[in-house]
Structure formats: C-alpha cells, structure tokens
Image: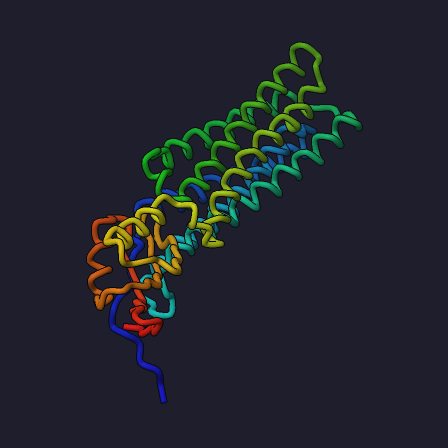
Length: 299
C-alpha cells in the first residue's frame, strides 16, 4: 500500500532567482578568464599569476556549486520528502565552496614555497597585463555580487562573494609582486605574495566553514530563542519543558519539537498559541504529558 503524505507544505525557503542569475554570470566570467591566467602563468613564468589562475579555477567550480544549489533548492522546494524544506541545500553548497576555498589556499601555498626555493624567470610585462585583466574581472564580479544585506541571510551568496574577494586579493598581491620584481629586482615578492594570500584566504574559509557546519549539524541549542520558548511555556508556573529540539530551517526561521509536563489539563494548542509571539518560530510540534497523582497521561 502506497503511503500518503500530509498535504501541509513545508516551503520555508523563498526562491532566489535574482541571486541565482548573478552567480551564473560571475561563473561564466570567471571560467573564461581562468584559462587565460593559467596559460599565461605557465608561459610567462609567474607563480603569482599562476596562483591567481588556480584561484579562478576553484572559484569557477565553487560558483558552479552555488548555482546548482540555488537551482536544486528551487526545484525541490515542494518535494514532501524534505521534512523541513530545501534551504539547507544552499547551506551545503556554501559549505562545499568553503572546503574548496581551503584546498585552493593550500595549493597556492605549495606553489609559492616551490617557487621561493626554486627561482623561476618571470616575464613581467606580459604577466602584469594579464594580472590587471584578472583584477578587472574580479571587480566586475564583486560589483555583481555586492549586496551586503543579502550576505547576512544567504550563505550561498556569501560564499560566492568570498571567492570573488579572494580572487581580487590575489590579483592585487600578484600585481604588487610583479611591479616589485620588475622595477626593484625583488623577485621573491612573487612567491611571498602567495604565502600572504594563503593566510588571508584560509582565515576567510575557516569562518564560513564553521558557520555553515554548525547549521548542517543542527547546533542551535545555544540560540536565545531556546530560552524564549522555555519562558513562554513555563510562565504559568504549572508547566515544565522536559525536552526541546530546535532546528533552523531558514536563515531566520526555526522549527521546534517540545515535550511539556503539566498539572493542568490543557491541550497542545494552548501551548502552540503561546509560542506564536516568537516570530522566528514557524513550525512547532508539541507533546503534552499531564501529571496528576503520580500518573502520567499524554494528551
């Protein structure tokens, strides 16, 4: 016998078609210039330029992941097999992008250390031309993605923006290193710029990894909403929260599962109405255990 699902919808995530389009545009720009920078880095012997090209390659992959996450979250938004909607598809995309960002940072570090030990001749004029082109692409991409308010609520967009910022940073470092090498003979600035870039990029990646990992692992019990829920339930002096589970189902929306013991013969709806004052709580499941004369009765 086929199982029938409840008709109640769990669509908590609003489709972000505008952000999806912006990420797709940046993906195409990055992918195109990636080939230019990697080829130029090998031809002109610049590790800074090569590192920037590698950055762009991993960023292009990350943008592709971000775009796919948006598309899947939108396509699956009404799929009843997702208990609390599809927002975490976007969070998973951001987490994966952060992992790629970390891997990219270590690739740059390895390449920089290699070139620092084994000096390679650099064709500065050609490398500078390509580096300035890469910076221009990064600035255009940053402008396309630069909606600060969206970054607070959209981890997927934030991860894409961080990838653009790291690209811009490595482009600036590459240009500075190439200028130093060309005009002052400071050849070591080229690999050193990659080492500096590593520490900056790994710091950004760690922040995003930590933020998204806690969401994917449902580490929400430190949220102040937990105490607000408990206070709302226990303010009558006869009810007690025995068990509580809080899950984030959107950037500012939560689901809650509660077990309450009480000496009053009150229905679950009574407690659900109390929790309506907490605007961030959009889905609540309550079990009430009525306690009297040492006998417990679930209602």
